[in-house]
Length: 328
Image (tube, rainbow, N blue to C red):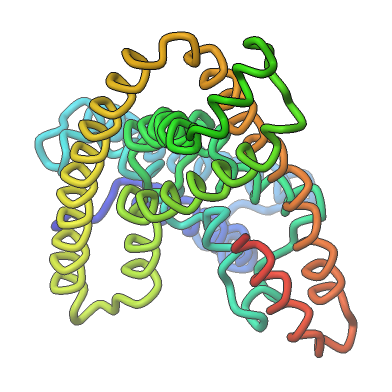
């Protein structure tokens, strides 16, 4: 982006000049002696002249600062000189967000860099796993993670649809006969294997679809590996990859949703009395997939935190084990 030197840097120059003047009191002492050399000076006169000189310097700096602040306000009102219809304050805030490392970026750091940058506690690391990996919080927790919020919300409802579909596939002749023997009552013990299998299968399908929907890994790769010489080339390549992923995501998800709708419509039309059982199985399996991650996310921190806080800093194996566990 071709942006002129920001007014904030001019403001910092004024502050820096003020600090330099404060750090050189000898020069300020010499000026009143040359200007008022014919006047006999006692200690009181010296202190008054020094005070007046400092006040004049501070007043000039404050006047200049006020002018720059007004320029900043006037400049921020005009959005023509900045990209994406943003003013200078918005550009600065966006810079601070981009410079700060995200949860995924911290979790994926190698061991040596994690020793330097990752200062989180066990609770902070656990919350980062919940925020980046748990479907409910990943979809609805408003965080700056380089992903489309609309696609994240879509993934949540798509996950529920996949769970609904997979549970319907497990209803065979034996299941129908069991429902008939139980006279329509729901046997939870009998349906436990079906609930577990459907949770695993739907989780696998949703994991594949999620790789096409999320773009944070592509943006972080560009952020970490791009250098000044080829930044424009890397930027174009990253945009092309993201566009391709989004197109594939919408095509594949649309085809799957149409197929799910057709099968579920036929199933519910033929087996009307089985719809309640199907809904119960779906709710239980989907609820199970929302609960068990809270227990799984407890284990990576058990190995990661001791590896990072070790004084010898030679626990790289434990650190890699924690990174492997956080993939589950």
